[in-house]
Amino acid sequence: MSKRKQDVGDKVMNKNTATTDDESGEDEDFDVLNVDFEWFDPQPEIDYHGIKTLLQQLFDVDAQLFELSALTDLILSQPTLGSTVKVDGNETDPYAFLSVVNLQEHKDKPFIATLIQYLRSKANSKPELAPLAQLLSQSTIPAIGLVFTERLINVPSEIVPPMYTMLLEEIDWALQDKEPYNFSHYLILSKTYTEVASKLDAEDDRPKKKKKAAGGSFETMYFHPEDEVLQRHALCHGGFDYSTKQDEGHSDSKRAFQELGIKPQGHAILISADQFKPAINEVAEYLKPQA
Image 1 (cartoon, rainbow, N blue to C red):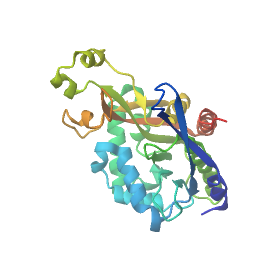
Image 2 (cartoon, helix red, strand yellow):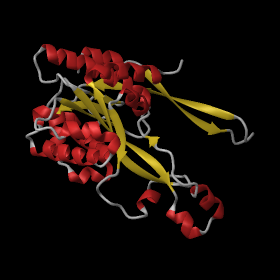
Image 3 (tube, rainbow, N blue to C red):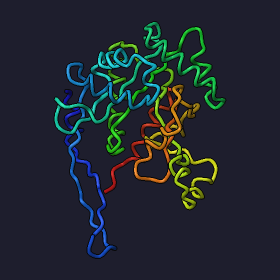
């Protein structure tokens, strides 16, 4: 673990949970949970299962289409590039991670070729992703840095800026050592979701909920709030449907104590290299911890 990541990990982030006062029914008490988040370099002997699990979460239902074991090994073969975030010490599974893979450098690996083909087909299916489709259709894939980042659902977004800031520094150091990280573009893989009308409510004949769910299309929501900032600097960005089809009850299985179901989608953000640092700086300002 580098000293720099130790220093970042000494910071304490607070996660606030509101609880209702049972006696008054009006006042709210706030329980503050102090959590020490620690940043580490990816470590093959420790982080394999944790990163693979987070990749499965990132790719959602399409995770079965990829060789995630090989992809995890590739990410872990770059121990000085990217970060993991942990709570209970170095020997535990990461709560979050961020890394980048050079598509040009690894294009001939079968599992990367499969991933490129998948991304090309998704980009070709969406007019708003045409610039990405053009890049991935070239006879020689450009030096695109494919960014993988995911975190457990309750991890606060304030951990994101340090991971990206450290990535920029690590890329600069790698370039000084003549390593192949001189990217022309960065492609960030993410996911969004929309709320959909619940099939369970339709079956139960609940008029109030039906009326609420019948308002037409629903707004796209972000699992990663930083995506809204990153795409302001993008050449293109957009969502795409997963290839693996699910039955009608799948959205209801994700609704978690709310009236509407959840339909996840893949999301891609393409940023030119000269805009990546300004994008990260804006993310840092947007997600700055509140005083």
